[in-house]
Length: 86
Image (tube, rainbow, N blue to C red; front, side, top):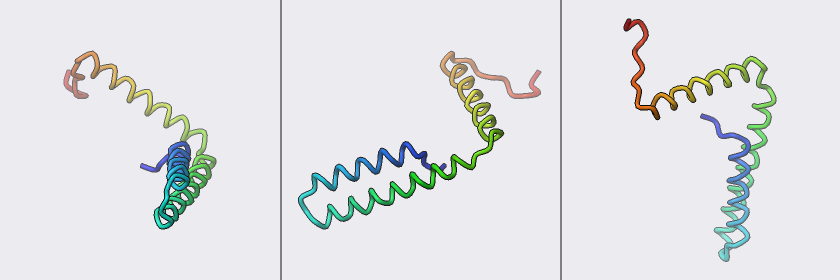
C-alpha cells in the first residue's frame, strides 16, 4: 500500500521537528535527510493522485462502502453467509 500525501507530510513535519530539537549534528543531518525523503514521497503521492481517473475514484468509493458494511456486520456480531450457501 502506498502512503498518502497527508501521511508523508506528517512524517516530514515530525522529522523537521526532530532536526530542530536535536543537539548532535549527525542526528540532525539524518532527520533532515528523512524529512527531505518524506517531502519527495508526498510530491510523488500528489502526482499519483492527480493521475487517478474518475473511475478509479468511484472504485475506491465502492470499496470503502463494502469495508464500512463489513465493519457494521462485524460490530453487530453477525456472521455473513458465504455466497451460494442458500
